[in-house]
Image (tube, rainbow, N blue to C red; front, side, top):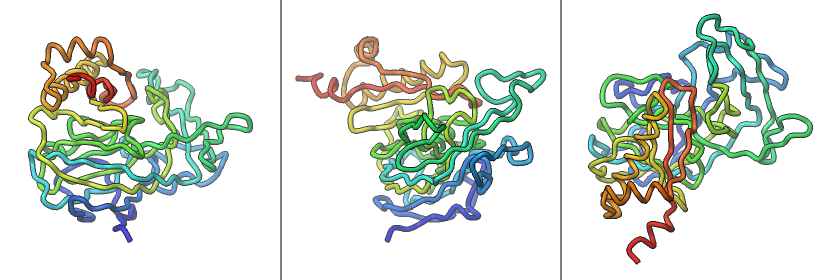
Length: 307
């Protein structure tokens, strides 16, 4: 039976290298991690429920389970987290919250007020209403390691990962992160049953508790691995976390050019021109303190590159 990391007593609201490890795993080990819903564990109890200000305390949201020690990990390594399975709870929610989302009313903080939609998630469907049933597309919102220094709140993101909110962080894919501290300090949380691009309304996905099965491994980090990377069966993907949005896009493309040059030996100038033709790119969220942009390249193009 795989090792199980409980969420009980192990939920953190900042990614840090200073917290005591809640569990330890070996490179190559498969283990299970329980993740709480983003608002507050146990907050969502029934259909029709409406959240109140007392239910959510900003910025203590997106609680992540961890830190989990990856034995032998040291600064300069690359941690690979393979997502094998996601099991979702049967209730999730999305909400409008004053001051949060694409259109925050910075002065009055009024907008639409607090509005909540609790939904049932069953039979691989999000039951939005009687007529609209959305196929689940499970994803992990928060995945990361200890930052270079200090701590970063779980509402934020950066070179260490964190609140990335990228739909490609899902079953069958592998996330790659530069290790900054001994033991890596892996955190996982803020899972979603489905999320649209931009995560427009802040609590913009179907936020949900989940149980993850993951496998970790280590290797020496590429010299220019600066932001998280993702590999899927069909694509290699690079992320940029920044504000304004164009900086996040530039970082994502820059990281892809580095990857193409270092691993696939495509000169940077040619890789840049090639991206002008084949890049698949979009903003996955515009609601965190820093935005997330993804740049994707289909592996089939790279496979044909040298004949």
